[in-house]
Length: 232
Image (cartoon, rainbow, N blue to C red; front, side, top):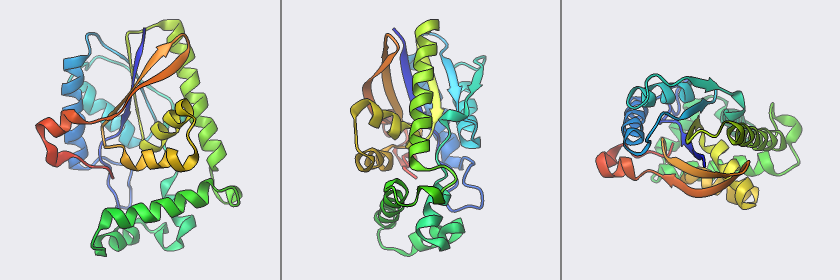
């Protein structure tokens, strides 16, 4: 029976001109994840990653700590939605990421403020009235992730590796879990906001169908370097 680990990438560069790059914290998180996988996996896994820089960086740094010979199979279906466009369509000023970062930094509770913006932006994106305004609409993103998950399950059912590790993003993981649990868009993206960087969400493959075993495991960071825990 195959166990699938969905990994959210390490902390990226929030507010920078290019978000799609690991921060120094993100690099350290990926190393800790690799050390943890070295402890819990008994053999080399089948490895998949989205094509985004933060996915590839997280995968390479992680695997260097545990299974350096593993090949990374790059599959764009595991890429995140365009969160910067989703923010910008909600508030045009946020087309410049540094303005969003500056607004967040000015608030007494930055995480709560960013959460409010995120909820509003996601509500607009998923609500149904504005699908035509996005490069990838919510229905298109949802279908892409669900099809990507099923394709992976079908492939693993044929090849039957003991483990598979997928390096992806919080929105993708949330949609995959939402599909398995039958969640609404609102509850799906409430999960997204809670998923820590380099956390593990674990699925068990039964036939060619995935079942959820665990969500958002990040104790391996909390136990060793709790100051490295991040959610943005």
